[in-house]
Amino acid sequence: MATQGFVDPSDIRAQFSRVMSEMYKTEVPLYGDLMELVADVNRQAMADHPEIEEHLRRTGELSRLDMERHGAIRVGTAEELCTIRRLFAVMGMSPVGYYDLTPAGVPVHSTAFRAVHEDALQVSPFRVFTSLLRLELIDNVELRELAAQILAKRNIFTDRVRELITQFESQGGLNQDDADEFVKEALETFRWHTEATVTNAQYQQLHDQHRLIADVVAFKGPHINHLTPRTLDIDEVQSGMLGRGITPKAIVEGPPRRKCPILLRQTSFKALQESVRFVGEASVNGSHTARFGEIEQRGTALTPKGRALYDELLNAARDELGEFPNEENAVRYYELLQKHFQRFPDSYEVMHDEQLAYFRYFATEKGVKAVQDQDRPRTLQALIQAGHIEFEPLVYEDFLPVSAAGIFQSNLGDNAQAHYALSSNQVDFHAALGSTVLNELDLYATTQQRSLQECGKALQLPEL
Ligand code: OOG
Ligand code: NI
Image 1 (tube, rainbow, N blue to C red):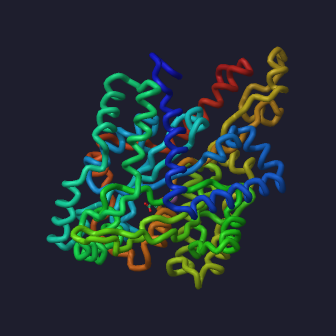
Image 2 (cartoon, rainbow, N blue to C red):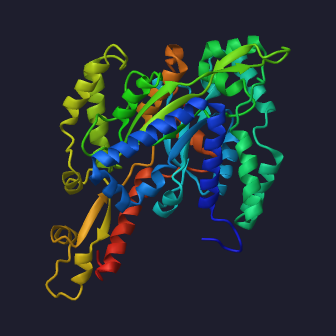
């Protein structure tokens, strides 16, 4: 929808996602290999299961699959988070959901920036998991102050991108030239910088407190730390990685393998050691592991009832395991997941009838042909039974806190499990963000409702 010559924010997002992917491919060549592996696996999955392709075609996901990816950044201050929110708004992305990672020993809280309307998601489903460091959790007062001082001095945005954000806000949009410039300037914030903002000794101090703290505080900007393609078969990618010399983390996070995938399954691998030049040193002589690779498989979004069941079963499996899932207990962990998740119906019909998941409804040709028929069914249930309405599961667009914690930990190393007395503080997060986050469940419910209204129009049943 271009008004007054403004570019549709979804098109800016699609363009940004493309250039980000290009930049990351040159920064982390392994990402390019992974993209090829995922494309191969996806092709094979559709060849082996034509019904998967048919389903993706119907929901429109087929055309977005190849460009689908999410990234992640970690920022250090409220000002950075607030400006990031305004920057993503230019691309039609809003903060959705609140994730508190402190219970898992990671001193951040997070949200995901993404498009919210199904039509916008269709143009580009690009999302960025964005974490804010919680400096108040550093117990060493001197170190906390040092970190705060270093962060206060840095500016992670170019002057021009700040101007363009303000222009977008005052005019309500950007024309093509400004949008092109915006994409180029915005990309700078996410780039890797070899020069650190601290000395080697300061880096070690920050690192000893928590590797994540060093990653946020010691560098010029919030380098994009991974970019994740979407696969249709994560188990296949997990084994394919080994074949290509990539070692994935020990377990796939999320629900077990199922016929009807739910929520999100993820795995990651350590990508590379970056060379670093610390302040006061003449040459590049340090290193830092910042970036990693990750793959995800997305399934159906769950209703509050379905989500409660998911959380219950995941916790039951983890409780019975009695320790963090790791390489040694991976086989047993998968068995426990399979065992507990038997209670989660593995059929879209049952998930629909028990209201465990969100769906999109489509009026069928048969239904449209029957509009003049006096005796035709009129309730949703009856219309479905008569084949006048069909439904497809709605894809989960968000993240999972337990999985995200596992991803953080596997890439930060084993010493990353600190214990914090303070937990979740969504009020502080909103204050830093300068806005509240949207509730993802409301978004799915609204999309489902809209699809029902469309059916109502097509079938001339406004009461639907
Ligand atoms: C983010 C880790 C979480 C995911 O997909 O759950 C994540 C980070 O390491 O910054 O990316
Ligand atoms: Ni991720």
